[in-house]
Amino acid sequence: EKAKLPTPVNLVAQKELERLEKMDASSPDYTIGLNYIDYLLALPWHAFTDDNLDLKRAENILDSHHHGLQLVKERIAEYLAVRTLSSVADFQVLVVDDEEIARTNLAYVLKKDGYQVLTAANGLEAVEVLKQHHCDLVLTDLKMKEMDGIQLLEYARELEPRPEIVLITGYATVSSAVDALQKGAAHYLPKPIDLEELRATVRGIHQKKVHLTMTRSPVLCFAGPPGTGKTSVGCSIAQALQREFVRISLAGLRDEAEIRGHRRTYVGAMPGRIISEIKRVGVRNPVFMLDEIDKIGQDFRGDPASVLLEILDPEQNQRFVDNYLDVPFDLSGVMFIATANAVEKLPEPLLDRMEVIHFPSYTAREKRMIAKHYLIPRQMREHALTSRKIEFTEGALNKLIEDYTLEAGLRNLERQIATVCRKLARIYVRDEKDDPELKVDEPLLESLLGPRKFTHEIASAGRQVGVTTGLVWTEFGGEIISVEAGIMKGSQQLILTGSLGSVLRESAQTALSYIRSHAEDFSIDSDFFSGSDIHIHIPSGAVTKDGPSAGVTIAIALISLLTRKPARRDVALTGELTLSGRILPVSGIRDKLL
Ligand code: ADP
Figure 1: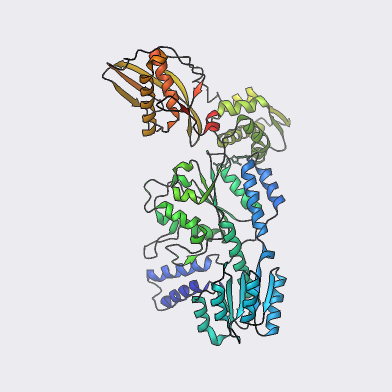
Figure 2: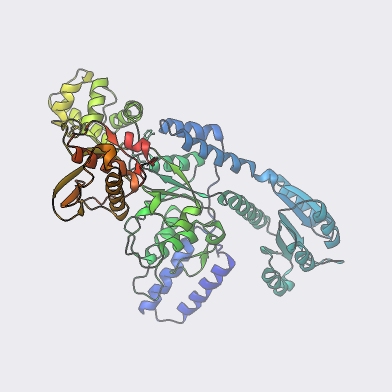
């Protein structure tokens, strides 16, 4: 009773309780049943946190945690703004009761909570009001002369947009209340009215309306290479809204039951990850991050897209059924944010429901800024070094970024900074060093971190016949590759190696055909292919590569090979080549350039 379970859940729990009462306490079924009831009681059916909608404050929080990312910050500010506009003052309630005292009392309580309130003395009057005003909620007495609550309900059901109806009834008419619920009323309240319950009910219906208008806007999906701030922006959103923050990773998920739970008939059955996390945070409106939604295991049993759609779609997730719970739980208050490295991998229907926000790779300059203003101060704090004046020189920062990390995001950079801090801490303690000022410059950096980890080998490799430099996009950011072409005696075969996907293979064929058909333009013997084989190889064979954008890189490698003229290695190429020799634009240019 104290848990105030929603009526359908309460019925299930009561039934389970009755079953247990007839059972022997030592039977395993008894424990299963008891755990189940415990679980139902522990879920936050009603608990939620109030959103902080102070836009200035939210913007400050996002700014103070993240450099740049303007687009992301703007989108979040818009979200909050819409949220604010659909607040209480817009919610219109119509109170219908033929007793004047009851009517004025109800209206008074609701007005005090900030709602707009209209009143009517009976059903007919209510219909007149509804004709002229849009109401979000009609709170009506069941027994009235002229036109009773049920008739009013039937009338209101046809309105568009349809108001929610809450009926107030005396005990004698509980059966008609059930009838009313079946006819589409949202709720009924017994007389005498418990004002707290009334306020909670109205508040719940209002929240639902707000959530629905909010969640009808698509779910945000943050896409970008690892370490570009997706998770930490999600965390800041929660902080800005003053909501709880939950994060689960979907990477390698292999079974629908991990999301949706096991049926209780299984031994050791448990609820799925969604419901367990909701229980853990204890509120039903956290910011819920579904990390790496593109990495769901290939061998997933069941259809991942349909489960995720059910969770993310506000129409469906109001009644999300976990197999273990077996009763619907309303997830519509949850603000879901998905993250992915490569959205291209997501199923179309899922992508359709989401608004993708791209988190770009960072330039060296941005990394320097972020390191200086965010990462270094944070690591200093975490390593208890704030009291010393430690400063990284510009040169040291550049070296750290260029020679020790090679990534689109900031993870390794932060890790390397942490390593430096750790080593400095040790030096301070061991040498009992007390001079508070220390400059970390390039030589000191190298003595702490060891020799540089990355070199720029391709550009300095020197020109060669039949070898070109290409740019590729991967989900971890841009990459530079070599394309190598060779010719030998044979029987007109095109050999392709290096784990190439089908689109890439076709680009190679297109490039070869283009050159064969335009041999004279390049002063190449038009007969070059007869009696020869051509082999094209793209090193790093362990990584599968695909996409059309290597077309021009392959073509130039072939032209270099056939004209015996070395190609420049310090110029990198990307572009799709058509059979007629046009070069088409390709995507991912920013990441590739970086
Ligand atoms: P992702 O979830 O995209 O893999 P994270 O959110 O874990 O990346 O970010 C990695 C680290 O980089 C975190 O410590 C984060 O605070 C920091 N970071 C990322 N982007 C920024 C930024 N724009 N400003 C400040 N710090 C950032």
